Length: 106
Image (cartoon, rainbow, N blue to C red):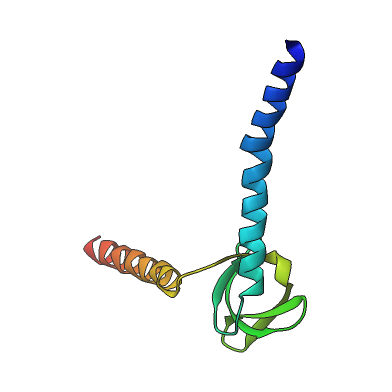
């Protein structure tokens, strides 16, 4: 009886921990293989950039005009929709406008 319980617990462990992790790894590997020039990505360190060039295991990210970083392909965490990166800039501009209007009011 205790042997059956042990088998059930091992099956549950496999189903709830190992299978989802394998799916996540497969999805990440598929993302890394599909990277192309021009894609906007974020690295595992949180650096946003557009892919300027893809080599074997190296990706060149353009993080600012004429500024490129050489990172490992495996350091890419996710592809970012171009609208998401633009929204961050728009939010910063709105915050600056609010600060200026508050300073003018004082």
